[in-house]
Image 1 (cartoon, rainbow, N blue to C red):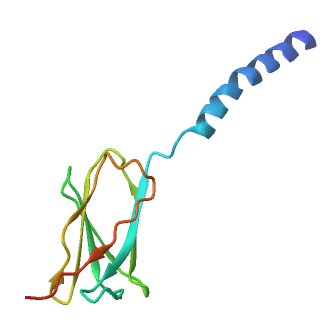
Image 2 (image 1 turned 180 degrees about the horizontal axis):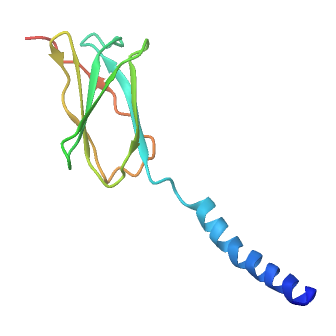
Length: 118
C-alpha cells in the first residue's frame, strides 16, 4: 500500500475518533452521591449514629456510621432510583427523608435530625 494512502487512512481514523472522544469527555457521570450531617434534638452533631439508605426499587439497605463531625456519605447511587434516608442513635430516630429522581443535583446534601426519645 502506498504511503500516501496509508497516511490518508490514518488521518481518517483519527478524525473519526475525535468526536467520540469529545462526547465521552462531556458525558455526565452516571451516578450521584448524597451526604449530610446527623444531629441530635439539641442540634449538635452525633458521632456513631447509623444512617440507613434504602433503595426504594430493590429495598436493599446500606448503612453508614457517622464520623467525628456527624457526617455521612453514600456514593455510586443511581440517578434513576428514589432513596430513603433515616438516622438512628441510642433508640432515637429521625424522620425519613427522600432523595428523589427529580433532584438533579449530583451531590445533594440531606441533613437528618433525631427526634427526642419518647
